[in-house]
Image (cartoon, rainbow, N blue to C red; front, side, top):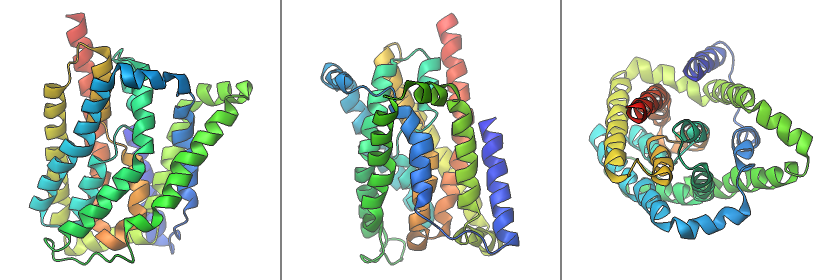
Length: 314
Protein backbone atom coordinates (compact mmCIF):
# COMPACT_ATOMS: atom_id res chain seq x y z
CA UNK A 1 0.00 0.00 0.00
CA UNK A 2 2.81 2.40 0.85
CA UNK A 3 4.43 1.83 -2.53
CA UNK A 4 1.13 2.74 -4.24
CA UNK A 5 0.92 5.95 -2.18
CA UNK A 6 4.49 6.87 -3.12
CA UNK A 7 4.04 6.26 -6.85
CA UNK A 8 0.71 8.12 -6.88
CA UNK A 9 2.19 11.10 -5.03
CA UNK A 10 5.20 11.25 -7.38
CA UNK A 11 3.04 11.05 -10.53
CA UNK A 12 0.59 13.67 -9.26
CA UNK A 13 3.44 15.94 -8.14
CA UNK A 14 5.17 15.77 -11.51
CA UNK A 15 1.84 16.33 -13.29
CA UNK A 16 1.07 19.35 -11.12
CA UNK A 17 4.48 20.88 -11.74
CA UNK A 18 4.29 20.14 -15.47
CA UNK A 19 0.90 21.84 -15.86
CA UNK A 20 1.64 24.80 -13.57
CA UNK A 21 4.66 26.84 -12.57
CA UNK A 22 5.42 24.31 -9.83
CA UNK A 23 6.19 24.88 -6.16
CA UNK A 24 8.98 27.12 -4.91
CA UNK A 25 11.13 25.31 -2.37
CA UNK A 26 10.69 26.17 1.30
CA UNK A 27 12.67 24.71 4.21
CA UNK A 28 9.32 24.34 6.01
CA UNK A 29 9.05 20.93 4.33
CA UNK A 30 11.89 19.81 6.63
CA UNK A 31 9.95 21.03 9.65
CA UNK A 32 6.84 19.21 8.41
CA UNK A 33 8.84 16.00 7.88
CA UNK A 34 10.46 16.37 11.29
CA UNK A 35 7.16 16.76 13.15
CA UNK A 36 5.12 14.17 11.25
CA UNK A 37 7.67 11.46 10.42
CA UNK A 38 10.50 11.76 12.94
CA UNK A 39 8.84 13.16 16.07
CA UNK A 40 6.34 10.25 16.61
CA UNK A 41 9.21 7.74 16.47
CA UNK A 42 10.93 9.53 19.36
CA UNK A 43 8.13 8.87 21.89
CA UNK A 44 9.66 5.50 22.68
CA UNK A 45 13.20 6.84 23.05
CA UNK A 46 13.79 6.86 26.80
CA UNK A 47 16.82 8.65 28.15
CA UNK A 48 17.40 5.90 30.72
CA UNK A 49 17.87 3.43 27.84
CA UNK A 50 21.24 5.08 27.21
CA UNK A 51 22.74 2.40 29.47
CA UNK A 52 21.90 -0.16 26.77
CA UNK A 53 24.52 1.53 24.57
CA UNK A 54 27.20 0.24 26.93
CA UNK A 55 25.54 -3.14 27.43
CA UNK A 56 25.26 -3.79 23.69
CA UNK A 57 28.20 -1.66 22.55
CA UNK A 58 29.42 -4.44 20.24
CA UNK A 59 26.15 -4.52 18.27
CA UNK A 60 25.98 -0.73 18.06
CA UNK A 61 29.63 -0.46 17.02
CA UNK A 62 29.02 -3.05 14.29
CA UNK A 63 25.96 -1.12 13.09
CA UNK A 64 27.93 2.13 12.92
CA UNK A 65 30.78 0.39 11.08
CA UNK A 66 28.38 -1.03 8.48
CA UNK A 67 26.28 2.11 8.01
CA UNK A 68 28.97 4.78 8.03
CA UNK A 69 32.00 3.05 6.56
CA UNK A 70 31.25 -0.15 4.65
CA UNK A 71 28.00 0.84 2.91
CA UNK A 72 29.32 4.30 1.86
CA UNK A 73 32.38 2.56 0.36
CA UNK A 74 30.10 0.20 -1.57
CA UNK A 75 27.92 3.12 -2.73
CA UNK A 76 31.03 5.05 -3.75
CA UNK A 77 32.35 2.14 -5.81
CA UNK A 78 29.02 1.62 -7.59
CA UNK A 79 28.57 5.38 -8.03
CA UNK A 80 31.95 5.79 -9.72
CA UNK A 81 31.00 3.07 -12.20
CA UNK A 82 27.87 5.01 -13.24
CA UNK A 83 30.03 7.91 -14.52
CA UNK A 84 27.33 10.35 -13.42
CA UNK A 85 27.85 12.82 -10.56
CA UNK A 86 24.17 13.06 -9.62
CA UNK A 87 23.44 9.32 -9.57
CA UNK A 88 26.59 8.68 -7.55
CA UNK A 89 25.63 11.43 -5.07
CA UNK A 90 22.08 10.10 -4.69
CA UNK A 91 23.35 6.59 -4.06
CA UNK A 92 25.92 7.88 -1.58
CA UNK A 93 23.24 9.85 0.28
CA UNK A 94 21.16 6.68 0.62
CA UNK A 95 24.17 4.84 2.02
CA UNK A 96 24.72 7.33 4.86
CA UNK A 97 21.06 7.58 5.96
CA UNK A 98 20.21 4.46 7.93
CA UNK A 99 16.82 3.20 9.06
CA UNK A 100 13.72 5.21 8.24
CA UNK A 101 10.09 5.55 9.12
CA UNK A 102 9.30 1.85 8.49
CA UNK A 103 12.33 0.36 10.23
CA UNK A 104 10.60 -0.03 13.62
CA UNK A 105 7.67 -1.75 11.92
CA UNK A 106 9.98 -4.43 10.51
CA UNK A 107 11.90 -4.72 13.79
CA UNK A 108 8.68 -5.38 15.71
CA UNK A 109 7.34 -7.82 13.10
CA UNK A 110 10.53 -9.89 13.22
CA UNK A 111 10.50 -9.94 17.04
CA UNK A 112 13.80 -8.09 17.23
CA UNK A 113 14.83 -5.95 20.21
CA UNK A 114 12.78 -2.74 19.93
CA UNK A 115 14.82 -0.97 22.63
CA UNK A 116 18.00 -1.38 20.57
CA UNK A 117 16.00 -0.46 17.47
CA UNK A 118 14.92 2.87 18.98
CA UNK A 119 18.43 3.60 20.27
CA UNK A 120 19.89 3.00 16.81
CA UNK A 121 17.13 5.13 15.28
CA UNK A 122 17.98 8.00 17.63
CA UNK A 123 21.74 7.63 17.08
CA UNK A 124 21.28 7.69 13.31
CA UNK A 125 19.15 10.85 13.58
CA UNK A 126 21.83 12.54 15.66
CA UNK A 127 24.41 11.50 13.06
CA UNK A 128 22.56 13.28 10.23
CA UNK A 129 25.21 15.99 10.64
CA UNK A 130 27.88 13.34 10.00
CA UNK A 131 25.95 12.12 6.95
CA UNK A 132 25.87 15.65 5.53
CA UNK A 133 29.58 16.07 6.21
CA UNK A 134 30.29 12.80 4.39
CA UNK A 135 28.20 13.96 1.41
CA UNK A 136 30.15 17.23 1.43
CA UNK A 137 33.47 15.35 1.39
CA UNK A 138 32.09 13.13 -1.37
CA UNK A 139 31.36 16.23 -3.46
CA UNK A 140 34.82 17.70 -2.92
CA UNK A 141 36.84 14.60 -3.80
CA UNK A 142 34.74 13.00 -6.55
CA UNK A 143 33.82 16.09 -8.58
CA UNK A 144 37.18 16.02 -10.49
CA UNK A 145 36.55 12.35 -11.39
CA UNK A 146 33.17 13.25 -12.91
CA UNK A 147 34.61 16.43 -14.42
CA UNK A 148 32.06 18.48 -12.47
CA UNK A 149 32.42 21.58 -10.32
CA UNK A 150 31.65 21.55 -6.60
CA UNK A 151 31.75 25.08 -5.22
CA UNK A 152 32.64 25.72 -1.60
CA UNK A 153 30.08 28.53 -1.69
CA UNK A 154 27.16 26.29 -2.70
CA UNK A 155 27.44 22.96 -0.91
CA UNK A 156 25.68 20.78 1.61
CA UNK A 157 27.58 22.18 4.59
CA UNK A 158 25.72 25.48 4.21
CA UNK A 159 22.32 24.08 5.18
CA UNK A 160 23.50 21.52 7.76
CA UNK A 161 22.58 23.78 10.70
CA UNK A 162 19.01 24.32 9.47
CA UNK A 163 18.55 20.60 8.81
CA UNK A 164 19.80 19.64 12.28
CA UNK A 165 17.44 22.14 13.93
CA UNK A 166 14.38 21.20 11.86
CA UNK A 167 14.91 17.44 11.70
CA UNK A 168 16.52 16.67 15.05
CA UNK A 169 16.27 19.37 17.71
CA UNK A 170 12.68 20.58 17.13
CA UNK A 171 11.19 17.05 16.76
CA UNK A 172 13.00 15.85 19.90
CA UNK A 173 11.82 18.83 21.98
CA UNK A 174 8.28 18.41 20.61
CA UNK A 175 8.29 14.71 21.52
CA UNK A 176 9.36 15.48 25.10
CA UNK A 177 6.57 18.07 25.44
CA UNK A 178 3.89 15.75 24.02
CA UNK A 179 4.95 12.99 26.43
CA UNK A 180 3.43 15.18 29.16
CA UNK A 181 0.17 15.50 27.20
CA UNK A 182 -0.96 11.87 27.39
CA UNK A 183 -4.26 12.19 25.42
CA UNK A 184 -2.41 13.81 22.51
CA UNK A 185 0.36 11.22 22.67
CA UNK A 186 -2.16 8.35 22.60
CA UNK A 187 -4.02 9.95 19.68
CA UNK A 188 -0.81 10.35 17.65
CA UNK A 189 0.29 6.78 18.41
CA UNK A 190 -3.15 5.37 17.52
CA UNK A 191 -3.26 7.28 14.23
CA UNK A 192 0.46 7.06 13.53
CA UNK A 193 0.07 4.77 10.53
CA UNK A 194 -2.33 7.20 8.85
CA UNK A 195 -0.27 10.24 9.85
CA UNK A 196 2.83 8.62 8.32
CA UNK A 197 1.05 7.71 5.06
CA UNK A 198 -0.50 11.18 4.66
CA UNK A 199 2.82 12.83 5.52
CA UNK A 200 4.75 10.75 2.98
CA UNK A 201 2.14 11.53 0.32
CA UNK A 202 2.30 15.29 1.01
CA UNK A 203 6.12 15.35 1.10
CA UNK A 204 6.58 13.39 -2.12
CA UNK A 205 3.82 15.29 -3.93
CA UNK A 206 5.45 18.57 -2.89
CA UNK A 207 9.01 17.54 -3.76
CA UNK A 208 8.06 16.19 -7.18
CA UNK A 209 5.93 19.27 -7.78
CA UNK A 210 8.90 21.60 -7.27
CA UNK A 211 10.09 23.68 -10.21
CA UNK A 212 13.48 21.90 -10.15
CA UNK A 213 11.84 18.48 -10.35
CA UNK A 214 10.46 19.31 -13.79
CA UNK A 215 14.01 18.96 -15.08
CA UNK A 216 13.41 15.21 -14.85
CA UNK A 217 11.37 15.52 -18.06
CA UNK A 218 14.37 17.10 -19.83
CA UNK A 219 16.63 14.41 -18.44
CA UNK A 220 14.30 11.73 -19.83
CA UNK A 221 14.29 13.44 -23.24
CA UNK A 222 18.04 14.00 -23.54
CA UNK A 223 19.65 11.34 -21.31
CA UNK A 224 17.14 8.47 -20.93
CA UNK A 225 20.00 6.02 -20.34
CA UNK A 226 20.50 7.55 -16.89
CA UNK A 227 17.20 6.03 -15.79
CA UNK A 228 18.39 2.51 -16.59
CA UNK A 229 21.80 3.17 -15.08
CA UNK A 230 20.10 4.35 -11.88
CA UNK A 231 17.93 1.23 -11.66
CA UNK A 232 20.94 -1.07 -12.08
CA UNK A 233 22.99 0.94 -9.55
CA UNK A 234 20.22 0.85 -6.92
CA UNK A 235 19.67 -2.89 -7.41
CA UNK A 236 23.41 -3.55 -7.10
CA UNK A 237 23.60 -1.45 -3.91
CA UNK A 238 20.66 -3.17 -2.20
CA UNK A 239 21.81 -6.66 -3.18
CA UNK A 240 25.29 -5.93 -1.81
CA UNK A 241 23.81 -4.40 1.34
CA UNK A 242 21.51 -7.37 1.95
CA UNK A 243 24.19 -10.02 1.40
CA UNK A 244 26.70 -8.14 3.55
CA UNK A 245 24.16 -7.66 6.37
CA UNK A 246 23.20 -11.36 6.29
CA UNK A 247 26.88 -12.22 6.59
CA UNK A 248 27.81 -9.78 9.36
CA UNK A 249 24.78 -9.93 11.67
CA UNK A 250 23.84 -12.96 13.78
CA UNK A 251 20.11 -13.05 13.07
CA UNK A 252 19.34 -15.47 15.92
CA UNK A 253 20.15 -12.56 18.28
CA UNK A 254 17.24 -10.13 18.81
CA UNK A 255 19.68 -7.23 19.21
CA UNK A 256 21.61 -8.00 16.03
CA UNK A 257 18.35 -8.57 14.17
CA UNK A 258 17.36 -5.00 15.05
CA UNK A 259 20.72 -3.74 13.75
CA UNK A 260 20.22 -5.85 10.60
CA UNK A 261 17.01 -3.97 9.76
CA UNK A 262 18.79 -0.65 10.31
CA UNK A 263 21.27 -1.66 7.61
CA UNK A 264 19.05 -3.12 4.88
CA UNK A 265 16.56 -0.24 5.11
CA UNK A 266 17.60 3.29 4.26
CA UNK A 267 15.85 6.54 5.22
CA UNK A 268 14.60 7.18 1.68
CA UNK A 269 12.06 9.93 2.39
CA UNK A 270 14.65 11.88 4.39
CA UNK A 271 17.12 11.41 1.52
CA UNK A 272 14.51 12.79 -0.88
CA UNK A 273 13.92 15.81 1.38
CA UNK A 274 17.66 16.51 1.71
CA UNK A 275 18.24 16.05 -2.01
CA UNK A 276 16.09 19.12 -2.73
CA UNK A 277 18.85 21.23 -1.19
CA UNK A 278 21.52 19.76 -3.42
CA UNK A 279 20.07 19.06 -6.88
CA UNK A 280 21.55 22.38 -8.05
CA UNK A 281 24.93 21.15 -6.84
CA UNK A 282 24.89 17.50 -7.93
CA UNK A 283 22.33 17.67 -10.73
CA UNK A 284 18.71 16.56 -11.05
CA UNK A 285 19.82 12.97 -11.72
CA UNK A 286 20.53 12.78 -7.98
CA UNK A 287 16.80 12.17 -7.44
CA UNK A 288 16.76 9.05 -9.65
CA UNK A 289 18.43 6.51 -7.32
CA UNK A 290 16.42 7.84 -4.37
CA UNK A 291 13.21 7.47 -6.37
CA UNK A 292 14.02 3.91 -7.46
CA UNK A 293 15.07 3.00 -3.90
CA UNK A 294 11.39 3.05 -2.93
CA UNK A 295 10.60 0.45 -5.60
CA UNK A 296 13.44 -1.83 -4.46
CA UNK A 297 13.49 -1.39 -0.67
CA UNK A 298 9.82 -1.95 0.16
CA UNK A 299 9.48 -5.32 -1.69
CA UNK A 300 12.90 -6.36 -0.30
CA UNK A 301 11.76 -5.68 3.26
CA UNK A 302 8.51 -7.61 2.71
CA UNK A 303 10.33 -10.63 1.26
CA UNK A 304 12.94 -10.54 4.04
CA UNK A 305 10.23 -10.45 6.70
CA UNK A 306 8.40 -13.39 5.12
CA UNK A 307 11.66 -15.34 4.94
CA UNK A 308 12.35 -14.71 8.63
CA UNK A 309 8.84 -15.86 9.58
CA UNK A 310 9.23 -19.02 7.48
CA UNK A 311 12.59 -19.84 9.08
CA UNK A 312 11.16 -19.26 12.56
CA UNK A 313 8.19 -21.58 11.90
CA UNK A 314 10.42 -24.29 10.48
